[in-house]
Image 1 (cartoon, rainbow, N blue to C red):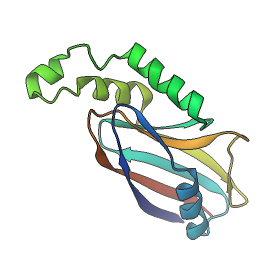
Image 2: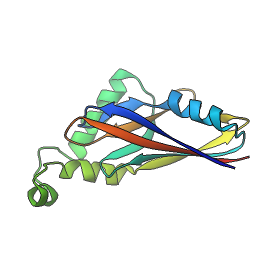
Image 3: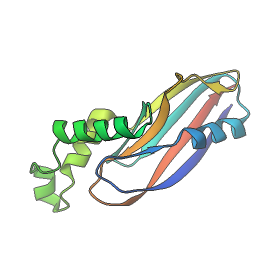
Length: 138
């Protein structure tokens, strides 16, 4: 069986990190699938899905490290070509990837005690983000 549903949320950009664990759990429960896989995918080329211990200090640490790895101030050919100054956001999203797969057992996602699912919006402006969640199994 396959069940899919979309989450929509508003983000601030510049690697804004939003915890979507509860929304994903709700979709898993609605699916009535007990064992299988949960795919979580950011729709768009400037956002990522990952897991993190979602607490304020670590969220800021991740944002700081992303800025250090791929600076929003460094010029990119993409930004020069398109004039949108968001080349850095495409690079960050490419490095992190658009999605994750989480195992599902007895109706529960297999996540660590402090592990939450997050969407990271790397773009250079506020956006309405779409995340597609697909539950597959039995």
